[in-house]
Length: 100
Image 1 (cartoon, helix red, strand yellow):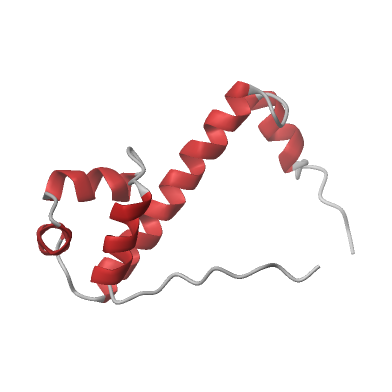
Image 2: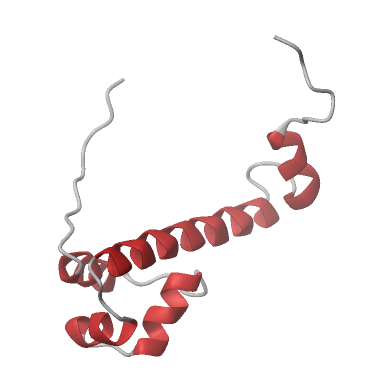
């Protein structure tokens, strides 16, 4: 296998852009990335169910604007709202202990 010299270490890239792991800047990036990913998961699940943002909002007692912000990763819903969204989309949350 040949090594591509143009491919760098992702940790080094993140370190240079957002600081080392544990710094406030890196933690803020991690939170934003997590919110964005969760928003994308919710958006894809909603579309799979052929549900509009308005319909999802109505089912959880919210409004379209709030659902849009969640899907864009602008806001993170609280746990109770997140659970209502999951239920409205016909999904389930499974909490398991990792195998060590």
